[in-house]
Image (cartoon, rainbow over all chains, first blue to last red):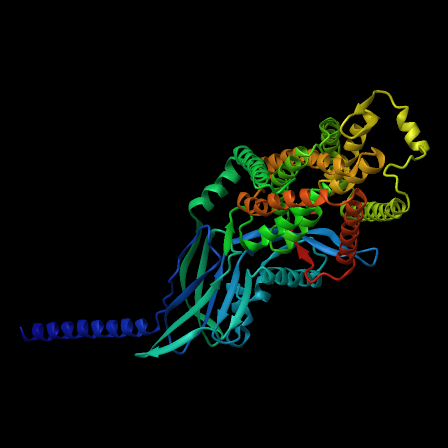
Length: 265
Length: 307
């Protein structure tokens, strides 16, 4: 009987210990658990849309640096290369095809990316222009130097349309109960077309990504914008017909107004 | 105020297209050109994709040229007969041009050939028209007679020997039916290759080869442009889905009014004055294109399309 009691007590103690240890682990995990939320995850494009803002925020380990990447799914792009003809005339001389490049690519970080993340990790998670350059497939390019040259032109082209951007130091951090709250308000460019985008938050320690959290941002056309856009794509004949009739009507209408208004002799 | 353009997929301050429409519509009503050579590059400059810019411009021209044709027709300045034959030629020429561009593209240096032809044509036409109209302005100052009897050139004599001669009442000229068909076709081929309406070529052809009075040239050219642009708008909307209805409406708000003002203003100017101003604009555009071709671009990559 005594033996049994001792045994029972030992089991209870062991169970307790497991629970306490488990709790400790859970509490510890909670303090480091990375969360991400985009407050404006559904952007609607109506008639008066002129871009938007997206706020990405969450909780992170206070010891970790953060990198936030907002990107569209990888796709392909076809662009015209300008070059000199006859030594002094600039014109389109070739077509450049790019594969595995996102249409929108924004990276924000607490510090300069190459100061907090190792090159291997950058390549692994496609963070930063050099990593994106390695990841992208381009044709036709003669060699690595040629690829690098045209990729940097590609970046210039994308930054010019406000679709690519890399910056650091804009993430707000606030310490609270041993946790860290982070938040960033980003400008959402009106040049970004409708589609699904992904905001990925990387927690970084000792040059390595230790945690990842994601949040979706979807951009959708609504109302008249959606109706017109769909009609242009799916019913070109009717759309063309309406466009022409409207133009004819407007031309005649203004002509009549001017006659009545005595604008002419 | 900004509006979102559903096909161009970008947002634009409405004052930009309305203002551009007003300015280009004014030129359209004054000179009988569609103004695509100005409008398309300007729209691209304001962030509209090049294919959408060209297609939407043709939709807008439908409105501006309707407005302009109507204004000119009311004062009897549209030669419908001449316009019809030009259109027949232009339609056939367009079909040939579309095939020609395929052959050109296959040779690999299409861009170079097209750009050079465009610059040379603009430059030559502009210079010729500029010098000719300046000389005739001086002449008309010296002589009081309005119509000066001119010696028929060998070229004009040869044209007079072509079959199917007919009288074009409105223009006050007699030509072979083949003449407007051939020259309409020529402009149609070039227009299709260069991606422009060709008004800047059609106007000088009507003035110098068909010998039509400048005011009838403007009205007839607009009539002809109207039908060309209806065809182009439909094809662009149907095959390329590149017409932006919202942008077209914003542009035509300006251009239809501009065309009326241009037509009224044009009646106050003499034919020579109209010609010399048009020549000046054509030359300015030529210089601008030469600058674009020779100055180093800030971006070495761009979207395709345009000319």
